[in-house]
Length: 215
Image 1 (tube, rainbow, N blue to C red):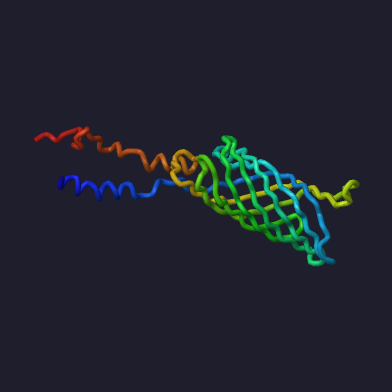
Image 2: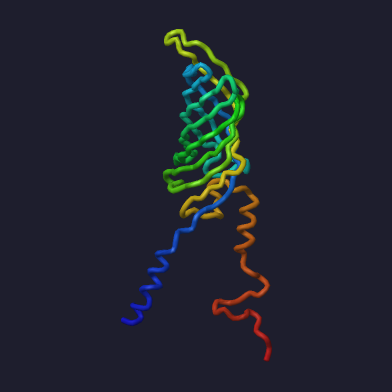
């Protein structure tokens, strides 16, 4: 009975320990296309309401988010006189395995370039509980507007590139050696080196030296 009482606190302490998490950094690039409508909302102000869609590519070439599809409904306020803009939106990212990640972003800049912060807010499946954040750079290469003859509204379309230079992420319960989000080959090599046993002093199952010293 006393043995059971002493063992109980040890068992509870083991159960209370947090699950291991995958923590890493990945550089991500994403070509995108945007479509929406442009509204004149003030004498010197325009508002774009639309969606950005594209594909994410992790620089290391692997990971659960490599070749992930994303859709970002967003809005931009463009100040005509100062040539400045503010952008805000939300993103749904679908991995090739069907798991989802959700994110929110804000950026400021000028037409053609917007810099800000991209924050991961959650996920599903293997990415449940994911959190992370990165600086974000959005560049616009091509853009144009036209008049919708049916509605009379102004339709805006653009293409460009989004860059997340240092996406820092954490996934509860993930295995760092698995590289689920693509931490790059350098981190995997370091993990293997730190977990290799010391071969300079081999031992048997009893923990004694395999080469006993002669008396």
